[in-house]
Image 1 (spheres, one colour):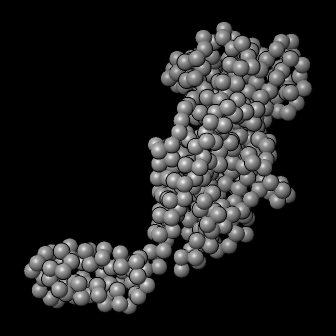
Image 2: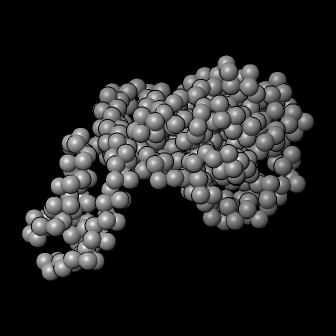
Length: 399
């Protein structure tokens, strides 16, 4: 049963390892598509599924009858092409899929090695799926142990030391490539990256920062919360032409920054950390305009990456021990029917015999706990089952 259970676990996706930001953006899974995917998965008897879609990856994890079903769901709701997936995507099954989950949760599979933000993204993705009833008990336990492994790696090693994230890398890139102080900065988009970048810009620089969002009320509230200026969305083109530095983190499904927004009469730096890419490719061809994307920005942290590489063996050892814990728990699932049956019989038996030594529920739970330990350590299920009855019926034995 354990092997059968493990073999039904799959992960399908595409990541920075084999695809650039533009290609990854083609597989971005929107919240509405995520919801539809969960509804269809439920209708075709996929017991558990959750999806992660970030700047570095789009992946779905599922317990399903076969890998084709998982692949079809991923392609249908990410909108990516079968051809590109064949060239740059992947599907992992069983033990390899579980290892991928644990590595992802711990930041080992992140473009910025040890990036701890992925754990928050995992929690958000799982919570969304749970609301649709698509996180079953085995998936739930697997995720919990993966999260425990991630936290242990963070607390027991220097693998995730320092403030390292895409938003932090963006600010570091600006410090290295642009004379940013006293320049005007336009922040377009108020999502998670936008919030973090605004905080870092305010902390490190004296530049004037203005925020614009497609929803003016959101931009206004964002500006008040972060102590910066805001402008209405209708003034986007005007503000783009005035800004020295434009940071785009809108994550729209189409290009939001177009060539006609630029006059080409001054130097401007554009940083696009949206997924999919939101700056039209033609913008790069305008004289005086430089465009940096996720891949360029992430390179700024390579020195930190090298330091973290020395901690990688420790991190992998911790994950291996937690994977063993998961395997032990999965192994125990084969005995769940036996344990449930015995518990029901003991409760029924207890109702018909005199138990003076302790409350019935206490004796039942102690007996079941001892049975679980014996089942884990011994293979003679029949003998263990019989001994559990004997223990229950002999006062004082299990207390």
